[in-house]
Each structure stands twice: as C-alpha cells, then as structure tokens.
Image (cartoon, rainbow, N blue to C red; front, side, top):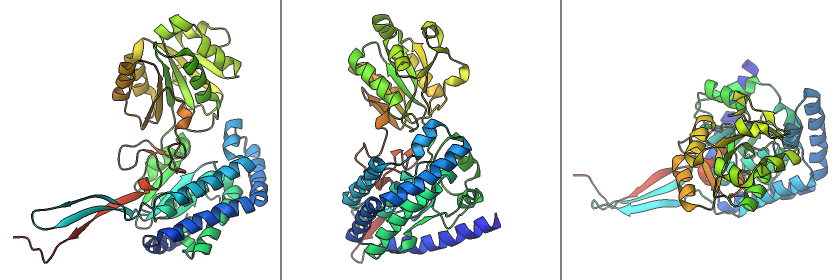
Length: 418
C-alpha cells in the first residue's frame, strides 16, 4: 500500500499542477489535442489491436464471460468509433467559461454564474478500454486533469490508447500530465485513489457491483455514483406489437455487456391477453435464457425465475420476465428492484406514458425506445464517462458539461454594502 500511495500522490500532485494550466487553456488547443489523438488512434491501430490481443489472452485465462470479453474486445470498427467520439467531443462547444445565468441587482452589482472545471478527476473502470479515450477526452474538454485506473484485464489496450491521448496533448502544447494512467495492476492503487483527499476532487467508478460497492464503502473523495444497470422494459397493454418486438429484442441482445442492456421484461396482462407469448418467443429464438415468473414460466423453453433473478444485472444473454397488472404494478416493481439507471415503457397511450415518467425517478426514462440508447454518444455528447445514477450534481450520461462546476463573477463600480 505504501508504494501505491506514493504512486497516487505523485500522479495527483502532477495532475493538480496540470489542472491549473488546463483551466486557462484556450479552446483551440484542447480541440487540437483531441483531433491529434483521434488521428493517432487510427495511425496506431495495428499496435492497439496487438495490445488488445494480449489483454484478451489474459482475460480468457482469468475465465471472463463472453459478455465481459465483448466489452474488452477491440477491432478496427470499434477503434474507428473511438476516433470518431474524440472528434465529436473536439467539435463540441467548450463548456469552460460558459455563462449559465446572469442578472443585475438593485445594489448595482452585475452577477454571472459561469462554468468552471472541477479540478482533478479520478476514473476507476473495468474491462472497456474505450473508457480511456472517452474519460480523457471529456476531462480535457471540460478543463480537468484526470487519473485513469483501468481494469487489470485491459492494461495493455488502455496503455496503447493512453499513448495516443498523450500524443495529442504534446502536439497542442498542453501538459502531458493532464491525462495520466495508473501503469500497473496493483489493486492497492484503487484504495489509494479513493482516499486521496486534497489531490483528487471527485471519483467516477465505471464497472460492476463489486467495484461500485468498494468505491462507496472506502471513498473519502466525493463520488459520482454509477450503480448497476438493472434496466427494465415494460410492455403496456396499449403497446404497438411491431414496435414492442423490435425494441425488446434490441434492448436485450444488441450488446448484453453494456449497462444499458435490458435485464428485466415486464409484460402487462392486457398485452399478454392480446398477443400471447410473442415477446418471450422472440427472445428464446434469439438464444436468450428467459427466467420467467408465474404464468410466463409455463411457456416451453423458459426457466423458472428465482427471487434473486429480479434486481440482477446479468450482463449476459439472460433476462428475467414477469406479468404485471398495469402500469402502477410495473412502477412498483421497478422502484423495488431497479438501480435508477434506465427504464423504458412501450405504449401508444400518452397518459400511461406520462404516469410511468412521473412515477419513476431513474436517471433515464424512455418511451418506445431501446434501453441500449442509454449512452452519452447517442445523447449527442460525443462520449461519456458513465451513467450517473445518484441525485447530486451529475445525473444520467456524464459528458463534458457534467464535469464542470460553477462560480459566480460579481462586478461592481465602487459598490459598497450599506
């Protein structure tokens, strides 16, 4: 732990110095850094894929599931996506210095509330090497320095992508310590980051239940909570059948290892009476293991659900399914078992959709859309560090704007208070 503490102290000290420069960095320099990094990702594709192959071998030896391997795996298309995300963040308006509100007071004061960087951000994540680029880009865009601690299984991939980010900083004349990466697999570094008060201003965890539980129990630094993605999809009695079939299948099967994958399907009894087991059949035919409750468990091919299947983030080709009596029972189920991440209602009834939206307080609520859209890139943010499920400061996809705080600029003219 002493060595890990020394490492994080060194990274944190360098990051704080870099953050001072970044807070004043001109927008064109930050844009140049990100565009150069994107070009480097494309240029270094063979080296990044070779590093990723080493990580995949390591992960298979550890016995990672197919879904987790999919999160780790890179290919040319995914690297093109990483580069595109970097370019999209580069082209977004710079949030630093944006005036959020301004007003005049009878005293003669003119007051502005403006966006300002948070300072130093620590990001702790598992498996997905693309987070290295996303987190680095969003932190830089918002004028923050960042310390990245990726999963042990993605060490080589993350290091190769990190090198591209550093190349961008160097080309733009920005401090290379603005984006730093913990260079080893020492788990003690995580604990050291969580207790680095005075060096790290906020921690963002991105990973499974175990990581989030560790962060919440040990953190002495403020945390943007990113809980499990226990996402629900509710097929209302007034749902359009064709829409429902498309959305349910996509929500579960497009990518099972992402936090926006649907983990529970709730079917209104009115929908089931009208359309039968079509949604369950679609899932079974797609190779999904359906853990069904009550009457749904009589459908051939399903597996009887256990109590702990509800409220479980499977991150695999598995889904829990249950019949409910209307939207109120669906809301009650989601409130009990959900993680306040993303929920979707399938309905053509405006009043029912409004009730669903008002009755739930998840970070993202959708209507007639796949939960797989729970992603900062799909929200037009270019990228995201994660989906914040807490209620303070950032909520939902955390992009560059969400990585800023604000300060007040007050202007007088020799103004005094009587």
